[in-house]
Image (tube, rainbow, N blue to C red; front, side, top):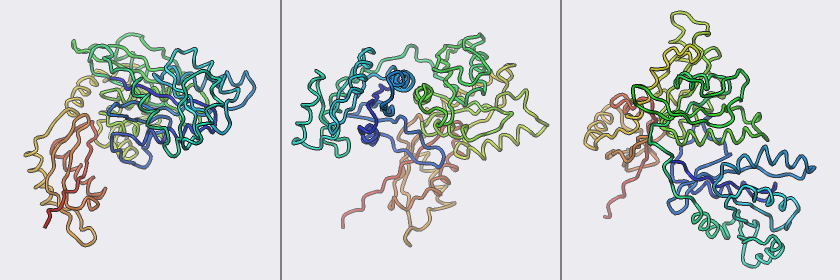
Length: 438
């Protein structure tokens, strides 16, 4: 099921990022920040009245010669507009309507998308007279202050009414997303799994601009395989259509059941590999790490073990993920992926009974209790599983602030030692039990 996309477009300095931040703060999920694994702020999950969607900040249109404007529009913004279900065209009450606003409106209308026209920097009813300057546009206008929230609820209610109904995207087959840097062999792997030349394979980085979905079969079981565009460093993506390839890749990570994170075994783990793995981890998706091009990597009898340990050292936050050496070109070990994907999906959907969990908790607390907090004992009363995909566990304690990150990591390690949860992240939520009234 794909979440609808709301794109914010407009000139530079009209307040798009401020509106984006306000919408992004309405997120459902509690997301932990790990150094090096935070998401790029190009897009974020958002929610209104229980309906989740993605909000996208497209960057500002600048005053440039006409031909440069259209080049930038085509490369930067309209590629993102194509992905959007709803567009918020944000304008600036302080500057009034400028010719560039008119250019943008004309371009956006060509796409037949649902457009909401918002005039920002109107911080109260008295300033709504600034809307008169925009009446010549002949559209419904939404007064707004992205900074203090004036008019925000009205804008969101109108977005809510326009959000498309969630629809099935075809057969309910497991979705496998192939992600990684450009030129690590993602399309070659997709072709190997499909058994046919479905993707364009080229040594030129960035050949795959968009995600391509294909149905493949393994022993009569079907899977949807998504070959995503390679993710480059942020600087190399700036002001190009690749910013939106990156956005699509993030969407495909969000929509997949299991992500295959492809690394180049001949190069080892680089910083961008770490960033991509962080995106998968943050999205709460099951994963397999693939060391591709194993046929050309320099190796001896212990190379695989050393390289796997290097992977876990660099991707320390994903030690729960299995690592597999493959050669997509020679198709060596690629068929091992399907049983592995099935097992990871089972682990993601696994549910542990409350009684079993609390027997586990009793054993863990006998080994190590939480440290004292401000000189007082921190008690954990019980634990229960509250969600799957990924598995999530709720802990009740007498002092929420006393359950620190180190103890949570210890608890996770103990949980995995008893219940495995191979290939999937687990999430913990801490709730403080109310003290009884005297």
